[in-house]
Image (cartoon, rainbow, N blue to C red; front, side, top):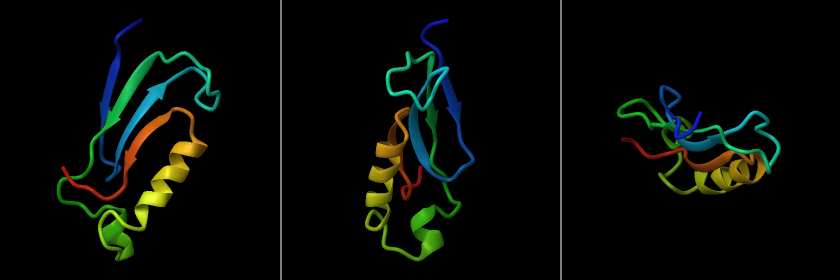
Length: 80
């Protein structure tokens, strides 16, 4: 299988991931990519926590990317 893209949503955050058979192995060969769309109107992390947008979530996003080798991009606050 090649050139596989998975589109998903309903988690109220935006993500881009490389899907592998061993997601916690940083050298795993991707079998697909996944794009998770942000919510349009539902609350995201900043709104649920009462934080200003794109402030306190940024270090959390960086920590997630550092901890999860298959996660390439994350936005916990934005809509759309």
